[in-house]
Length: 317
Image 1 (cartoon, helix red, strand yellow):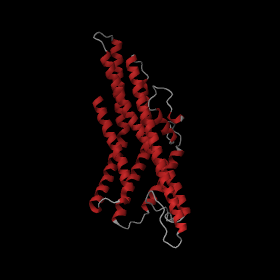
Image 2: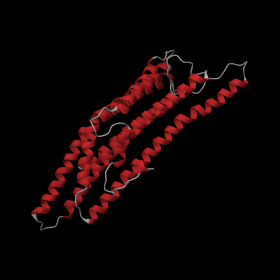
Image 3: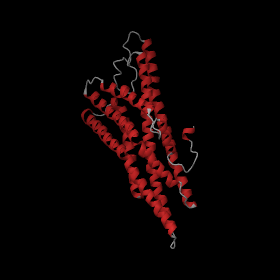
Image 4: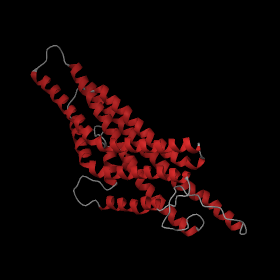
């Protein structure tokens, strides 16, 4: 697959930039029609239908609140990608400038090998999100197909509900018992999941890659310093000083790039945790919130990853 192929082993964050462009956020300043179409579609078919859901009990309130928090988190990160894209591309260019410098054979080998490991993570992350997309979109319709045939065979009994992957009121359509509205709902969910999975994948690939690559540049600078001999020329010293200065600039740009993303990450992770703990204390663990627990797990793992990588970056600096 050409999207995941790496042509130049020294090129940094290749896959992340490709995904960002595919999402409709290229480097040009032209109107991002594809991007804004997804933004509007997400509001119309994801946020508003959840607001229209009738709240009948505490379980529905807390479950819907957690889902709305997660959907708001996704929407915020989608908007943040648009706001952050210039800083992301600027940081990528700065890191690429550092990677293109002339180094010794030892450092060069280390740089290429480490960059290949970062690119491998990006490929793995893309495959993981693609697999999750397939499972999330395919499983409910497959199970609902069995429900449809059972309902047709038992015409006298009360019909079973189709499997709804996410609680919403799709503008008062009967998506639980009527096959045509359910088919429309399935198509909508598949399209929404493309946007959701793509935005999460791009955010994770880009953010993790820029943090890891910045850490890599600090390691390269440290190796340059260790290679300095007792008697060095002024040009060699200037080269190391310039390399260190450029790496520090990358670290500053990294902080500017991640500020908004981390703000949303920590805020919504805390909000979903509070809603889930309140529900569990009030009602006990219930299978009806299992899907929300999965969403909570996703956000928690992402937050833990940010904290771990931040600690690694601090150690390198």
